[in-house]
Length: 491
Image 1 (cartoon, rainbow, N blue to C red):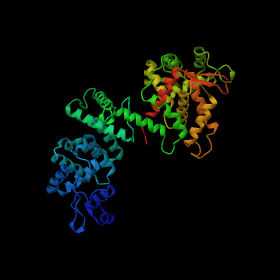
Image 2 (spheres, helix red, strand yellow):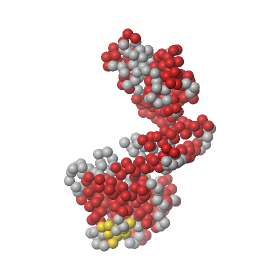
Image 3 (tube, one colour):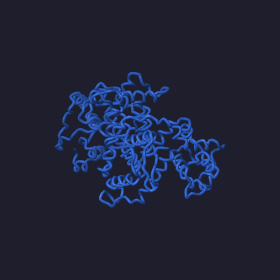
């Protein structure tokens, strides 16, 4: 590695390169041979004999290019052999890692890419050399030179259009920061897509090619693998994510929380079947969607953006068993808590949006109105989504209700309080218990939705009722927890 004194003493082009590679931990002054008078030793040959021999051939005709290629390969594959090189890896290096992470001048970036292309040509991997020399690589590097935001946008567009980047699937959204199993699966899928492109089984840019890419990716991820004892990459990813979910985020580990979640883990490995009485359960939200399309131009709202009185009266006619707040005749939406909960959920799901003084249905709302299963899936995923307080409460309540056939409200509150306190939701892990005043609103909102949509049946005194999950509630709870447990890691 170049010492700080060597960098300070360098000049001109050598200084600019030395700063970049000293930062990266690369070889001394890439692009220039070591100065015999400086006492710096020549870099050792690469562990892979083919790479070492190819670098030696390049060094014989252009030592600067050999030094640049060596540094690029160290970044790309480390001590691994040529078999570790992939088109996606080369693209990532040329289009993102080199221009964004290497502190070097743009023209030096171009020289390094050119040197890497020459290495690939000599190594018999001309297809990777073509990636380095391509007009796409040139345009992406040019975009980075002018503006980092434009460069990143150009990189993302080029990577997506290449066809070898594994895309998100309905069964799996890739994490921003991947665990080991997911990282292995992602790069393996990228190689599989590269092979499909080379074989002509996937033609980026052709009609329907993105759907074909998804099919190929899913087939690769679900194929039984010997190294996983007959399991698949997708199963390994799901298992790892569920384990990480039970363990909790860094700094929020809770033994009480883990004890509540671990027993339901096996139920989350496979998606639950939609409830049989789906239409009955979803009747309140589907009725709400019907009101949006029943009015030309959308449903008129009050000056504060609330549902009008006419809709409140219509809700009373449609759902006469909905209790009114404060035992009075409902006039406003807040006088009918169930209607307020349905309206709030529909807006949170983005099934509708405000347009001036009207509430209009969105395209997603139209799709969910026509497809009860899609609507149910959206609701279940929403119930425990995100890293906020309501989701933290919901996951514990659902887990308790799944484990206990009959459970008192007071008991649920107590168990949730202990788990959330241990997880550091109130003054850290050694703080006072989570205040009831903080827990009660999130708890009440969840229970209101659960009773409105028929997930829970209550009996006994109002102050401390006994709860039981219905069949619909059990499917919804499993679907909600599964969605939460399998959510991508965004850290």
